[in-house]
Image (cartoon, rainbow, N blue to C red):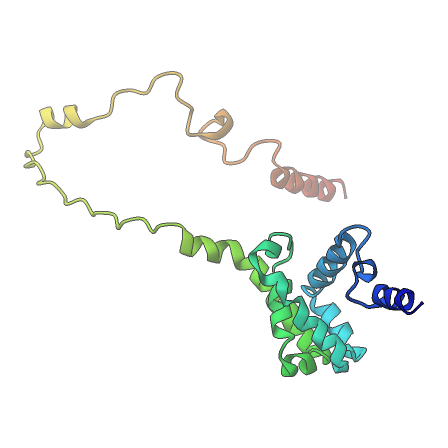
Length: 201
């Protein structure tokens, strides 16, 4: 009988393979929950909410934040869509930052700085990524040809050839050269209307 009791006790010990916890979905649910929580840390308003509700005073929660730093490793970082969450996760390891995020003004400062980072990120990044073009060489002016004295034959050579018929006219809409305003111009018609009113009275 003693041997059967010993075998039952041996099967109840935590080292036995029967008692080892196994996730039914191989940890997928836990992975998704931790990923979602870490990415929520990219929002300064959410961090402010956590600070206002005193989550940062709980030692277990601080330990959980330390545990979540594994998301910074390359095999996990590829799943992160909001990289600011990793920066805020790193800042949350500091007790001063956790205390400061309880104040609404600090939340607004963090939110504003995050906005400016997003606004200027592309231009700032391109400034350092794109190669700078080489300085343009200033062409040296060539020696000017000697000027001929003005004479009738020189003037005839320098005049422009007559314009072709297809060239657009410099005057808009083909107005005759004597009229300054078009007949249907609103400024002109308003003046005429006023004159007519005064003439009727």
